[in-house]
Image 1 (cartoon, rainbow, N blue to C red):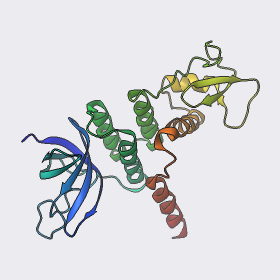
Image 2 (image 1 turned 120 degrees about the horizontal axis):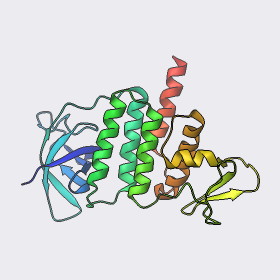
Image 3 (image 1 turned 90 degrees about the vertical axis):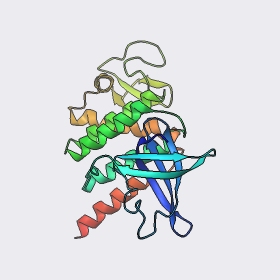
Length: 236
């Protein structure tokens, strides 16, 4: 039975002693597994099926829900703390909601792993997340051309202002409006040049707008946890 490189992206209790585990594998994409007996005190799986642990999993089954037979860590857990932890949970939610099950996304797996490592190594959180979000939009076919006016087909004017229209692109405005994008920002986004703070703000706004239709209006739990965490730290 083949072992698959994987990460746990979500788990929940199942029956008395088991778990339902959502995993993201390199070779077979997202999979839903039953980890039988994994909550028993002496189970070899107890404490292993956690987010951010590089795993090798063997599983089998004919239906949507497969049985997990074996799991072992292939490397130490990727240590994420504070805002980086919430960011890692956010990545897991993107994987869970954006990727269909049983479809290989080996390139996304590598990008996900790399982003987790970058977060653990203390790289800038906002650039890390924006790079991954942009990558996901492009790999899934949801990306847009930042340098072309979607209405006229003309090149974006660096000195003009533009409005984002979902699934179409950017359309020139006669004058600046709330939430508009500066033309020079769009050229920076096309190059993924996030070195300027104001461009980074535009990148975040675009990501949220572009991803919203595919997240189905869901309130992401990682964002709620992040906000709750910030409030808690202020009250201490």
